[in-house]
Length: 447
Figure 1: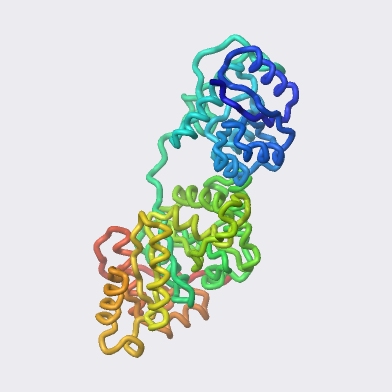
Figure 2 (figure 1 turned 180 degrees about the vertical axis):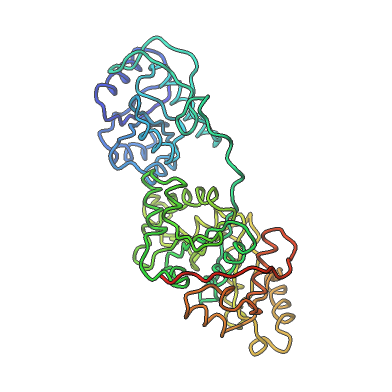
């Protein structure tokens, strides 16, 4: 049975040659529609009439979001690039298209790439870049004799491949329910302590309701940060070096990727783009701490509209990509009730990950004579879990850190709150607690 495909090739000569060759030879593919632009391609894909699409690297407005819509329509994508167009090939691969072939390949090669991509998508299996080692008879019209190269993911020949990358970093999402339990404070302090332990750490502000990490560390100007990284990822232009440039280096192995300061900009944080940002972040730092939004509610009215942006899509994407989820609760009775209800929703959203519970602002005035025992008992009774950290309410230390735009570890190194967070960081880093290290602390420069 022939595979129905769509084409969206900007070079009309190449497209005509491909369609003509597919019609003349039994290559296992049939072109059911020649699309004139991206909207035409997306509309045709939603009809279910095709299982694959062959498109040009320079197709106008094609981005990661469009690729996600094609994938959700069960349409595999094969990229077609002009010979020598390294930038176009790199962009397609960074968008997530692993099947990329040059336009001077034979029609047999092109058809084989399309069939293999469709098979991989239907099997929900990862497929490497297409590599054909033997030649065929008929080149694509508009180009010369085929010269099928064997390429890696970056488009380099076998003998120029880079060595295997180092182990990927770990993504830790920090979530908390409505009511400001101190989620951002915990995320910032945890990232600082991990960096202080000698692990390279990246702190990402992915709160779609308005980030505040930049202000907490003294970044008073509105830096592009995560929004710029998401835009670059959506266009297939983001790589590790560019991501590093968008981050703000605080020194000591700690980087910060500021979020959106204005909640109205939430549509810029598309889930598909954030997934790519987090994937590249793993290659930039050993630990990636992500401060995500509080709201876990799904937009039920948009359940069948896969192209519409979702208010909480960024939070869902972060939690789905996280290796570890830290759930922050405040110690007040109202905060605990909100946390118990929210934790149930969190477990439903990420059933494969059991959240690590952190109780913030611990004090006897709201929890009784022995707040540790009382809160641990309450959480165990209502959530069937125990907190991994109980952070004392050191209001003076946190106020001083916020007023100075500095880290808690630098403003109040002897704070009991800092000690509790450092113990959690030590546990996450897989290290035994260390004694006091003699080193000179360096304050963050004024910004």
